[in-house]
Image (cartoon, rainbow, N blue to C red):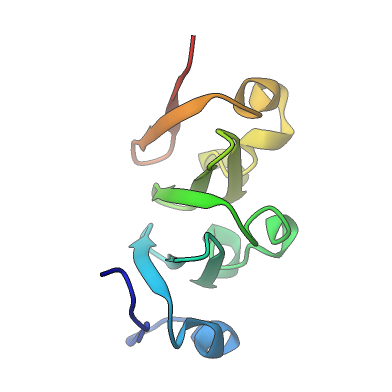
Length: 128
Protein backbone atom coordinates (compact mmCIF):
# COMPACT_ATOMS: atom_id res chain seq x y z
CA UNK A 1 0.00 0.00 0.00
CA UNK A 2 1.21 3.48 -0.85
CA UNK A 3 3.84 2.26 -3.26
CA UNK A 4 3.44 3.49 -6.75
CA UNK A 5 4.80 5.57 -9.54
CA UNK A 6 3.43 8.76 -10.97
CA UNK A 7 2.33 9.58 -14.50
CA UNK A 8 1.11 13.01 -15.52
CA UNK A 9 -0.53 14.24 -18.73
CA UNK A 10 -2.24 17.25 -20.27
CA UNK A 11 -0.84 20.77 -20.06
CA UNK A 12 1.59 20.09 -17.23
CA UNK A 13 4.88 22.02 -17.31
CA UNK A 14 8.04 20.57 -15.78
CA UNK A 15 6.98 16.96 -15.25
CA UNK A 16 10.06 15.80 -17.15
CA UNK A 17 12.18 17.53 -14.48
CA UNK A 18 10.88 15.23 -11.71
CA UNK A 19 9.73 12.18 -13.67
CA UNK A 20 12.72 10.00 -12.77
CA UNK A 21 12.26 10.73 -9.05
CA UNK A 22 8.66 9.53 -9.22
CA UNK A 23 9.21 6.08 -10.71
CA UNK A 24 8.64 4.35 -7.36
CA UNK A 25 7.76 5.00 -3.74
CA UNK A 26 5.06 7.60 -4.40
CA UNK A 27 2.51 7.57 -1.59
CA UNK A 28 0.21 10.43 -2.62
CA UNK A 29 -0.24 13.16 -5.23
CA UNK A 30 -2.10 16.42 -4.56
CA UNK A 31 -2.89 19.36 -6.82
CA UNK A 32 -3.81 22.98 -6.46
CA UNK A 33 -5.04 23.71 -9.98
CA UNK A 34 -1.93 24.65 -11.97
CA UNK A 35 0.59 22.45 -10.11
CA UNK A 36 1.13 19.09 -8.43
CA UNK A 37 3.03 17.81 -5.40
CA UNK A 38 3.93 14.16 -4.90
CA UNK A 39 4.74 12.85 -1.43
CA UNK A 40 7.01 9.85 -1.41
CA UNK A 41 7.07 7.12 1.24
CA UNK A 42 10.36 8.51 2.55
CA UNK A 43 8.68 11.86 3.33
CA UNK A 44 10.22 13.79 0.44
CA UNK A 45 8.14 15.99 -1.88
CA UNK A 46 8.55 16.62 -5.61
CA UNK A 47 6.62 19.33 -7.47
CA UNK A 48 5.80 20.19 -11.06
CA UNK A 49 3.42 22.41 -12.99
CA UNK A 50 3.28 26.20 -13.20
CA UNK A 51 6.40 27.41 -11.41
CA UNK A 52 5.01 30.49 -9.65
CA UNK A 53 1.96 28.60 -8.40
CA UNK A 54 3.71 25.80 -6.54
CA UNK A 55 5.20 23.81 -9.41
CA UNK A 56 8.67 25.00 -8.44
CA UNK A 57 9.63 24.36 -4.83
CA UNK A 58 13.38 24.94 -5.16
CA UNK A 59 13.35 27.72 -2.52
CA UNK A 60 12.18 25.21 0.11
CA UNK A 61 13.63 22.02 -1.42
CA UNK A 62 15.88 21.35 1.58
CA UNK A 63 12.84 21.44 3.89
CA UNK A 64 10.90 19.11 1.58
CA UNK A 65 13.65 16.51 1.26
CA UNK A 66 12.39 14.45 4.22
CA UNK A 67 9.92 14.28 7.09
CA UNK A 68 6.81 15.51 5.27
CA UNK A 69 3.61 13.81 6.41
CA UNK A 70 1.02 15.69 4.34
CA UNK A 71 0.61 18.43 1.72
CA UNK A 72 -2.40 20.72 1.23
CA UNK A 73 -3.00 22.98 -1.76
CA UNK A 74 -5.18 25.97 -2.48
CA UNK A 75 -5.57 27.72 -5.83
CA UNK A 76 -1.91 28.78 -6.29
CA UNK A 77 0.14 27.57 -3.31
CA UNK A 78 0.95 24.53 -1.20
CA UNK A 79 1.83 23.89 2.43
CA UNK A 80 3.48 20.79 3.82
CA UNK A 81 3.21 19.65 7.42
CA UNK A 82 6.37 17.96 8.60
CA UNK A 83 6.46 15.24 11.23
CA UNK A 84 7.99 17.83 13.56
CA UNK A 85 4.81 19.92 13.29
CA UNK A 86 6.48 22.62 11.21
CA UNK A 87 4.70 24.09 8.18
CA UNK A 88 6.60 24.70 4.94
CA UNK A 89 4.88 26.92 2.34
CA UNK A 90 5.64 27.62 -1.33
CA UNK A 91 3.89 29.03 -4.37
CA UNK A 92 2.15 32.35 -4.91
CA UNK A 93 2.86 34.63 -1.92
CA UNK A 94 -0.55 36.33 -2.09
CA UNK A 95 -2.19 32.92 -1.63
CA UNK A 96 -0.15 31.85 1.40
CA UNK A 97 2.91 30.56 -0.44
CA UNK A 98 5.31 32.43 1.82
CA UNK A 99 3.62 31.89 5.19
CA UNK A 100 6.73 30.62 6.91
CA UNK A 101 8.68 33.74 5.97
CA UNK A 102 6.39 36.48 7.28
CA UNK A 103 4.98 37.50 10.64
CA UNK A 104 2.95 34.29 10.93
CA UNK A 105 6.14 32.25 10.50
CA UNK A 106 6.91 31.91 14.19
CA UNK A 107 3.54 30.27 14.87
CA UNK A 108 4.15 27.76 12.07
CA UNK A 109 7.55 26.51 13.24
CA UNK A 110 6.14 23.74 15.45
CA UNK A 111 3.01 22.16 16.86
CA UNK A 112 0.86 22.23 13.74
CA UNK A 113 -1.65 19.37 13.75
CA UNK A 114 -3.53 20.01 10.52
CA UNK A 115 -4.05 22.57 7.75
CA UNK A 116 -7.06 23.30 5.57
CA UNK A 117 -7.49 25.70 2.69
CA UNK A 118 -9.89 27.97 0.90
CA UNK A 119 -9.41 29.27 -2.62
CA UNK A 120 -6.60 31.69 -1.65
CA UNK A 121 -5.80 31.07 2.03
CA UNK A 122 -4.79 28.48 4.60
CA UNK A 123 -5.71 27.93 8.26
CA UNK A 124 -3.81 25.72 10.70
CA UNK A 125 -4.79 23.91 13.86
CA UNK A 126 -1.99 24.21 16.41
CA UNK A 127 -1.36 22.33 19.64
CA UNK A 128 -2.21 24.39 22.73
